[in-house]
Length: 320
Image (cartoon, rainbow, N blue to C red):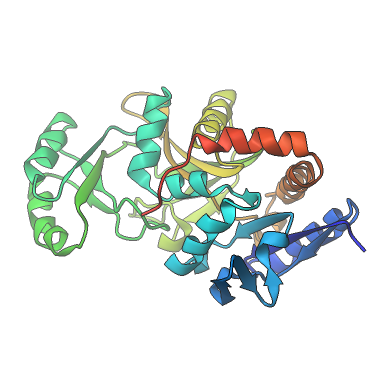
């Protein structure tokens, strides 16, 4: 019987089951048993315990949550509490930070990392957005501060576009609006995967013909691409600034300013699908090995665990 138990909630589609099997096998070789399918949607809490499928979550040595498509506010609420009791990957504070586009971008700029120029303003202060668009040559991108997959993102070609969007914005139940300068690019991006401060792999995404969004859910296509040192170093700095143990950093090349910018930092970057692996994206095994090593240290090394907890504590804030 394994000395430690860790809980997993990993997506199953796109090769997820095979990836989970690899985790289970490699961790068991390190005397760590994986308890699968601990979806917090099925959990409840009472009497000082969070119970999921009959298991008290606080008795686990660690919880690994890796399912972007099925997160609900209820699951996130329990995730935050669980993070206060046992090690969680990704740590909740960094996860919550990177769920917010403004907070992530603002923090990166505080760390001297290139991002698109941006403006956050009160919902009744659209004049501030107009001034920003004029400063940027008339073009901008409106983004919900939360959400993923490119949903709700709108390119504004001029101030008239903002005026047309205004009635829709005013109907939204949000206290603020967020826009970024439109980056003149070739409609491709870089995705750099990082685990525990180490480079894992790189691929790109290409927008469909006559479109500008590279997100796969918006019709983008995964492409192979080789990163240069500048792209990798920028991604490593961005991951470190957010505090994520596992990060997928999206970058664009700004053709106007001739520089790379970090567009987003994702806390649940997908593994390559079997089809993508067949096309040459071969970083899954390295990514699994680095995550297994991280789990092993957090479970077996109390000194490292305390150091990790102190390092992530500075990112704590309330998730709203």
